[in-house]
Amino acid sequence: MVSIALTGIGELVTNDPGAGGGPLGLIERAAVVLDAGRVAWVGPASAAPDADQRIDVAGRAVLPGFVDAHAHLVFAGDRAAEFAARMAGTRYAAGGIATTVAATRAATDEELLAGAGRLVTEMLRQGSTTVEIKSGYGLTVRDEARSLAVAATLTPETTFLGAHVVPPELADDPAAYLDLVRGPMLAACAPHARWVDAFCDRGAFDADAARAVLTAGMAAGLLPRLHANQLGPGPGVQLAAELGAVSADHCTHLTGDDIAALRDAGVVATLLPGAEFSTRSPYPDARALLDAGVTVALATDCNPGSSYTSSMPFCVALAVREMRMTPAEAVRAATAGGAASLRRTDVGVLAPGARADLVVLEAPSYLHLAYRPGVPIAHALEL
Ligand code: NIG
Ligand code: FE
Image (tube, rainbow, N blue to C red; front, side, top):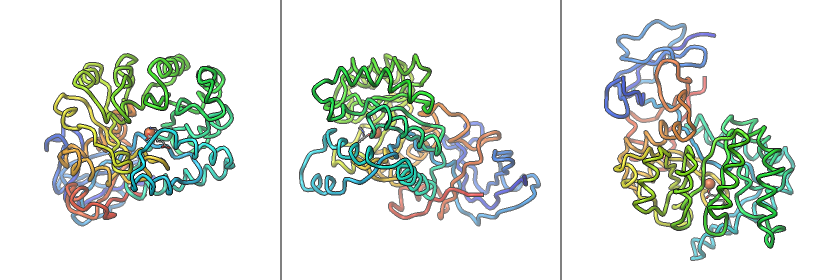
């Protein structure tokens, strides 16, 4: 394998505090040397070592690949009509998930893989080089297990979300569904999953049910993360802190105590502004989280119901415009924050030993990600 020197980088975001240049570890007029799929060297172009091949990016900005730590990509069909109704005034509710469950159960494995693969490609074209993928639209042992088997062909970051909602056929016996999820469904899914998740919210699962699922998943060797406090205030974030979840996701409706619990337990707050955009809901208070010292990640929540975007640059722009994050905070949350949300140290950073996952911008600075919303300036470097 040949080593490659990327030169002519106008502005390099390293996220490496050791590199100087503030929280983003910015280096101007930089170079990066890549070797065998890893970063071998980072620094000023004037000091770059020799490499087998050189690529001059002519003053463009370069960042670590985006880490999209929350996506629901294994599904069939879409819910465009539900979106249109919402824009006309209908409120978003967890119950819409059942529409996608019916379509997903009716799809073949090949159709599910083609759909999820198309979205992963879409993400890569917009700079996401690490993507988490959840199950949660199958809700039978067979359909959850095959959803995760599909996800595992696309990413190592797979999440068992059998506890998404109670499926229609068990609507009058949620306890039976809970037993299924933490029993045979978990047993069938755990071999394909790294994470266990539950939707702890109005219309989905209460704290006791979510706790039962997460503790069973942890006993099976999975790492815990939780959909928490999306649709209203509730116990999800406190539960995430109690269980030592790696991430609490959404965090749209938080009290001061919730924020303190996240901080004290070291739980990452993974914010999903695409969901607030697409459900016309109030955005999470990112400033309060950041000012309290909570680690914040940004992710797309890509799914056919509440957030059908695959674009991390769009989420960065929303975070800056609607959540009052600085462009630097938003870019860090979309890269290093996502890595923290997935407990990864090999992505979200450009330093020797990290994966050679890079985004090249059609722009001289990371600032353009928020400054040029909706413009396709970010591309993953495909070598
Ligand atoms: O993260 N909150 C739960 N699940 C998804 C939405 C799923 C759907 O509406 O299909 C979310 O927003
Ligand atoms: Fe989600």
